[in-house]
Structures are given as structure tokens and as C-alpha cells.
Image 1 (tube, helix red, strand yellow):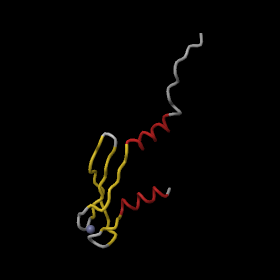
Image 2: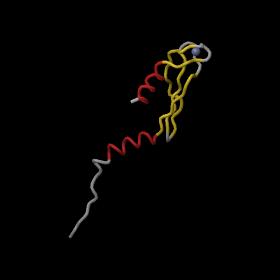
Image 3: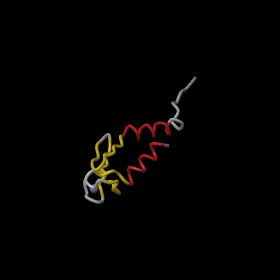
Image 4: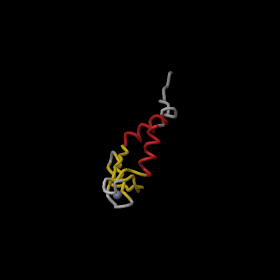
Length: 80
Ligand SMILES: [Zn+2]
């Protein structure tokens, strides 16, 4: 819950050292790697990078594993 709120906050505004103020930022997809995606937060006032966020594939896989565990296909077993 707290992390969700923090992400919402960072996505809307971050402190910019050049502007000396909390500035609105825009998110930009910086890099796509096989195991993660990196987002850059750019100050809308001066255009400098004020933050960065990584979304790892592990987080996505964790969510998929937790949701997929219940509907995993049963192993076919013949008792006779
Ligand atoms: Zn700025």
C-alpha cells in the first residue's frame, strides 16, 4: 500500500536539484533488457533526469507464478 503510494508520488513529481523545487516529471522508457525494464524520470522544467525506476522480470514472474499456481495443469498419473 505504502509502496503503491510512493510510486504514484514519484510518477507525478520529484525534487529537481536544478530547479530547486519539486517538479512535475514525465516517465520515459530508457532501456529494455531481457530481465528488466528501466524507466527514466525527466523534469518537465529543465529536462534533466531526476529519477530512475527499474521493473525486474523477477517481479513479473513472481506475480505470474502466484496467480498461475492455482491453475497449473495437473500431472497425468495412471494408478493402474
Ligand atoms: Zn528541473
